Length: 221
Image 1 (spheres, one colour):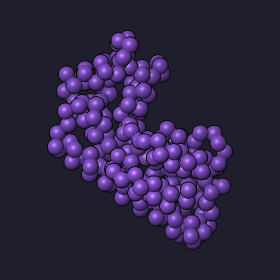
Image 2: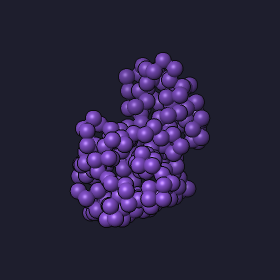
Image 3: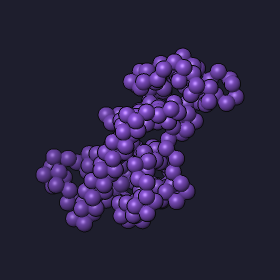
């Protein structure tokens, strides 16, 4: 990174970490106070694990999806929730399943379910998040990769690059990891993952003007 770019990178990472910490604290506080709606309770349990918590639940579901049809029956749904370490009574799990299974097929599409878990963002916030993603997605293929970052950042001033500790690719991968599921990074960030991440961060920020300022300062929008 050029010196000003590296400072911007540090500022962006510090801001992201701070907002994620606030989001986790807010979710934990809501859980302590008690939540009647089981879908909201499940959402808060995921967000208490961090902005990638919902994605982690999706991974637990995918592991059980042997035929890759992205659908789960009731028993698979309950097992996925349990395997991920979330707490739900059988009655609550059945209620959530019934509410998602709107066509009464006995199956739920887990991508749609995960979208329903994602905290809602208003139009202006979502627009800012998509602008940030599109700025990073230089190739326009719907995902941020190391190649995209090469067109955005010069890493030659990064201390770990200067010291020889990290290569250029390692620095870029470290950046991408911050938006991916912990310890499960695949070296790219999709638009869905980026939006999922910031929907979690957004949930911790009540003030629209503050969210707007954070995104514009972080990404130079």
